[in-house]
Image (cartoon, rainbow, N blue to C red; front, side, top):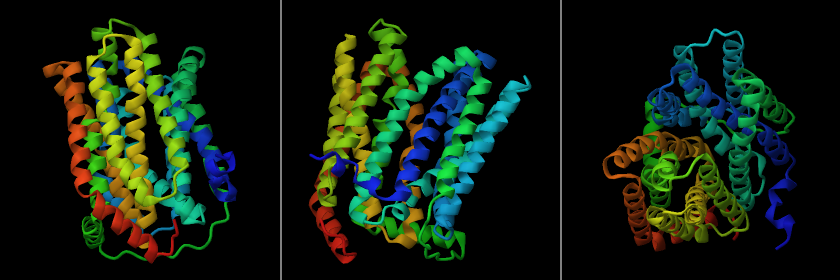
Length: 415
């Protein structure tokens, strides 16, 4: 296969700008995430508080993402993305100022984490919705989404490693400052874009708009099925990484080096999944990948539950990373291709909710279940539930594929 086909979304100038800006910005985000963990633990010496700050920073998405979707359907996506990126940059600079001046407190960190969570309720939704504005041919949407996902996972591998070095050399405060500066890359890229005028449909009553969005999603078999399985897999299968440090220490009897290798293999599996997805075009075939990827994730978790050797865990981590990312990215690609543009914000907000909003609940569930039955048994239960979710999706797969093909034909997309 030609490389030009694999990266065909780069033919669009706006997408090249977006991808380049995100390359820098995503690495900065991961640097801040790791630095925040070190800072919180250093201030409190409490694992409970460390988990609470992570939870409180994500939970606003659960409550505000659907409302953000309604509002974003009545806003200019380009401007909204510039505003949300700017607000996130300000949060990073405020953290940097507090730490570098020695005035930071855990209360301030919690407040700023909640603020960032509110911003992300809008930013994650509009980022997904914005892809259609910078990729002119809908047939290339899947490729663009896959490359974005590959970028995220590459940053997930590189960012923490860079953060670990920077924390030792220059400290947490400078890490926050670097993240703030990194945001300038994506903001400048956005401002350099030439975006075609977007048809804005002004929203009336907020509650009415939300009800319309819910009805639109749940009246569509493909949309309903995709979002439900995304939420279910996120709840029961995605948070395996939360328990991996416990598994490595107590079950494998290894240290941080083994943890790094295992999580690195999971990240590598994620990248392989996204590049595989970048080669696909047929949305109806993408629907078949959703239960397949959930099955791969489930089998990876079940295999991990039996592992007592690091290299075996690394092997199964490849499958968990591959399956987790493939089902999420394939589902989002289909949603982007079949949604009406005037409801895109609302639909993608439900997708954001199904992942980012449900993930902290899944982390709490995984931690509680792991405490009660042990981490290997938790992996086993999670894997079995993923297989069950795949079976339920398969039961509707035939009708889902037919509806997707009919929808694409109606909007003039050829596959």
